[in-house]
Image 1 (cartoon, rainbow, N blue to C red):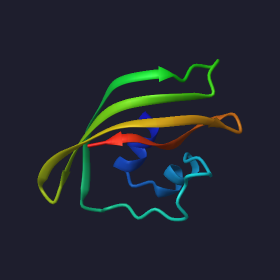
Image 2 (cartoon, rainbow, N blue to C red):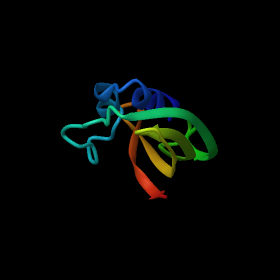
Image 3 (cartoon, rainbow, N blue to C red):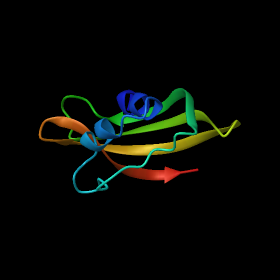
Length: 94
């Protein structure tokens, strides 16, 4: 989760696509150059250990967009794919 947040912060679309599950990954990813990520708060996690094949991360990410502050609150689902943890989808967002 933290590596994907960092990839959003530095606009690394290639990493984001590589770390996205192939069943839900978009063909391309257009990142908004006006989005400035300011911080990440991990609020909760479930499963996700070496013994699991799935897990969730609930987080709040703070940003500014065109000078206006905002936040993204999401519970992301992750799954193991070919030995690596990858983003699957969001359970909810606000």
